[in-house]
Image 1: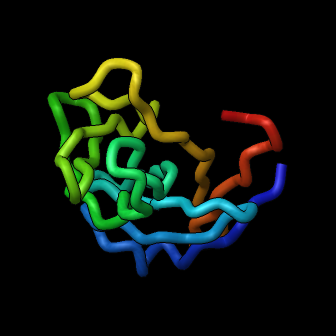
Image 2: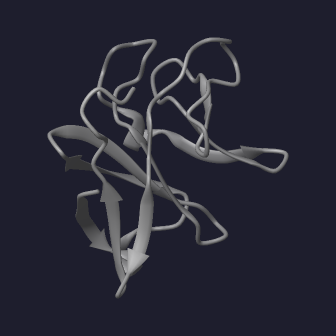
Length: 112
C-alpha cells in the first residue's frame, strides 16, 4: 500500500476539510471535533464538482458526517454512504497519523 503525506496533523483544523492529490485522485481530508481524521473522494457524486473538502462537517447521532457544499446531501465519513439518497456514495480512503503527519493511502487500481 502506498501512503501519501497530506499535511501535519496540527495544521488540520477541527471541523474543516482540505483537498489533496493522492495516487492521482482528488481526496478530501477531514478532522472531526474529537480528533479523528477521515478521507473521502473530493468529487460530489450528485453535482459532479470537486468540492467535498468545502463541505459542512457535523454528525447525525454518532455518525461523523460532511454535507456537500452545493446541494447539502449528507455523507457518512466512515463509509462514504449518502444518508439522504440511498445508493449514492463517495469513495473512502484509509488514513493514518504517523510522526505527526496525516497520511492517506492510494486506492488500488480497479478499487471502487
